[in-house]
Image (tube, rainbow over all chains, first blue to last red; front, side, top):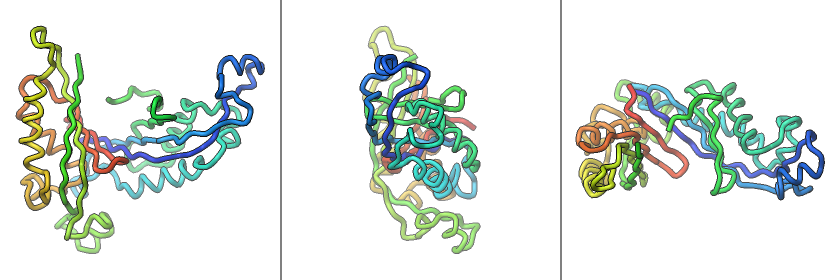
Length: 140
Length: 136
């Protein structure tokens, strides 16, 4: 039987939204206060959903210890208490939460193979959230 | 189609143990959860049903009826219980969140008449939950 398991992690990071493709005035117009020169920070809540058949032997979709190790080792440690703009992943990419979700999905797709990576969901604040499933439809 | 979600909570104890394995293997796979004395959680259950709005009542489902079914099938059976010892499904299955969600789905699906069960979401902890959609 197929089940979906979701685990939540916290990442605190700063960012500034700005792109070289636009002038200073255009950046200001598009990104508003997110374009303030010295950046700002969020407590991002990251939810990682994996799916698979529930093992008859363990009763589990995957070992939570493995999932935690993959997410903490490859994502949380990489971005927590960092400035996203200074990270190489965002050298040519605006660190919006849309892009952060896609970057994290792609990292986990490579690094976690014990179950199917269904989607990542990120709450930037408690009022907004972003989901990415690698282009696939999102299971509700 | 309208989706309606109802929550309830239950507090229960459990442990993870596969009788086919040695004690050492159980501890290797399940870690602290293999302690045969058990441990407990405050679990939050979210049950989502779907259906069309009844033109007379404006309801997808009678919430009172849904609440009564949840209380009878889940809360009365699992709240302040030891899942391994007191809930029949777990005499032969390990009461992981995955298996608890599946057992709850099977209990509810048999009783729900008006609306169709869409999702069972079981939070074992605020940062850990399992979804089951009735998939094989």
